[in-house]
Image (cartoon, rainbow, N blue to C red; front, top):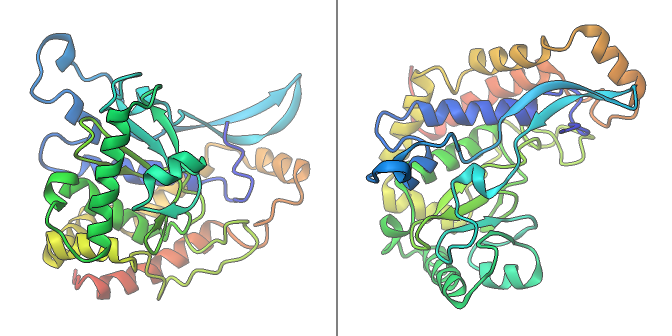
Length: 314
């Protein structure tokens, strides 16, 4: 159950997962979902799609504890290895929960310090550590401007979509320069890595504690780190611009789509439930800060900024 404590609108986190799924489903090639790569080319039971998506899905719900109203929110699937089609204890099938801020090129150190939780494999062996060290070396080279191993170590579709998602919603709690937090990073081989959004309620301009709108829709660039600049350089600015245009033209990165997603969630809760929520929790920090209109207006300004940045014309 996600209480959405900082977000009085009760839609940010869940709507962003639905937005990400729209992005994924707009891909015209297969594998489509990142988790499809686990099954692609295999036969028998190993080739059966199991429903894993690589990100949570949220379902509107009302929570009562011992018969007493607790609040409205969303029941979400978690960051479990099954959600990413990752084996429990295969050394080269790795799922990293980047739970605290750390330099993207310091995963071995971050695992040792606890800033990364290794969700899989259950037992971290020397093989796993070697794969993490290789990932660190790759990221270090990227930060320095070398894109030699970009195609081997990342999935072009995944990483461009991840970057554009972070940029569109201004996910300030995922990327800051060359540091990363919350994003789930995983690999089926220990060689090619996928970047997935997680815990995406700090967005659309709202401060991490919900007390203010602090990130400008018209100027906040989430991809200032040299790692991300190297990704754009390696795959080409035209590839990023083209994918951005697809997401605009497919009515995914639009004001209308965001408004629809907000309506889809908020209208699941009758107004009386919102009134009960606000009466129960009158100190929700963003009560006078955010609303459906704040998000919609912010997105309209954001699109003006990004359309210019990615050279898009309708």
